[in-house]
Image (cartoon, rainbow, N blue to C red; front, side, top):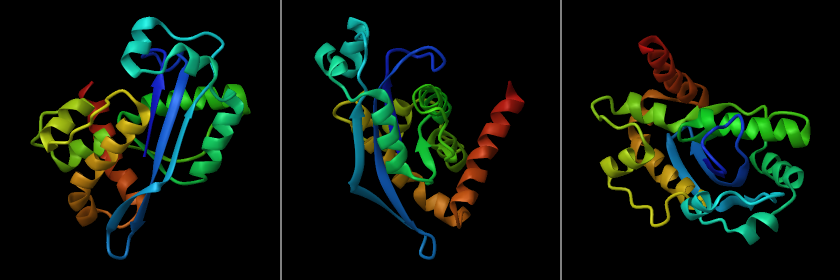
Length: 195
């Protein structure tokens, strides 16, 4: 599970400021999922220029932290090493995939080959009666508290908790990550048909 902090909301132009990820372990025989808090990753990428004051107020990554972060190529390589070939899960994952992919191509000369799964799509197909779209709406529906929203590590943990809440339904329908990807794709297909 991963989350990012950025200089804005345009994945094609804005900068990647920070990334966090938490490992998940699934035993497909028992259909049990565990969040591996000890298996986590967090990095602030060095910026040549800090993001705007309003942006800093949103995510809390100050000017000094941005200017003193890890060199982007080293940070992205460390992230690639951390995730290996595992599936990457994120809420509204298209944003994260586009942004991380652009930065990896720029700094590493390649995009990550990992499959992506959108947690929002999984929420929507497992709880069709819920009229939620944003992470905050889904968290409110399940009563999930996140003391520090818009901080990559805290948001990643909240997204893990959200996955745990929908897991019983997923576990009944899925016997592998490929099944989870197919289920998420049903939502993507439905949304493309509605637009």
